[in-house]
Image (cartoon, rainbow, N blue to C red; front, side, top):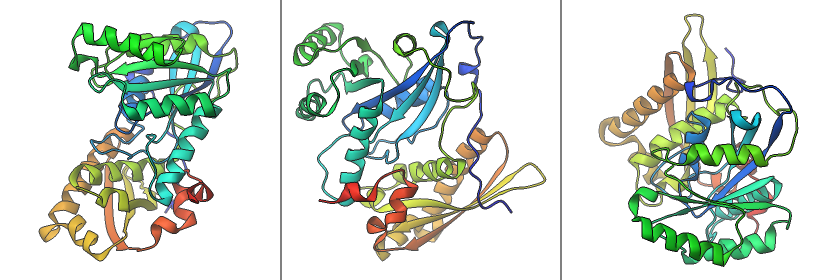
Length: 327
């Protein structure tokens, strides 16, 4: 049994299987920042052409700095996306670590893309992010604006919002996109590719993410839990891939532990007669089978661990720094 599967996904979806031109290569890092639920994970998945980041209707669900790798053929460029946690007012240790990770990802990037929702406009949260950009990011960092969910508002509203945003901050470029539908995403990808410095590609051409498969599998299950649960419970649980076995028949067995902070949460996750956990397992297994391209046998177990939010190793597993959560 291979319990230490740290394989990096080398998958070439149809959207990214392209013939690239010869000549100097470009490569670099792009950070997506914005308020929670602005559509950062959806945009990342759309550009990369595969599901590498958790996407739910809940806010603050992206914990690790998940990187997706996309090719921009016209620029002969490889774009490494840093999908940061949504930036919000932190209340708990985990919240503080997530926000610190978001700004750390932005500071490390060659280009930053601020994503806002068209129908929400220039919110107080976005104003706070713009102030932090001025304070936390080096002056040499290019910051572009992407207005998402453009299909929800009229053209005149978009034009007014574009003017308002560019008066609030001198963005180098403004894009109007629908991450969910794909509108404008190709223009954004091509522009980003052309802005990156000349540099050999950082990953093999067919690699789409730099997360170990164990972590991606855990994120998929956490997504399904988040979609089925309500209120605060999704933020008080974590998923850990305990075992991974690639079998001789071509299938994969994955054993995962779901840690919750309270006894009451365990019953909610299990559901009456185990209905909730069965539904979560089925949905996660289907996604993982599609992603891996082979049958998956998924086994979930729920354990109460009251102090997991204060355990250093849990933060390391999520790509976060435990000390960043200090008040």
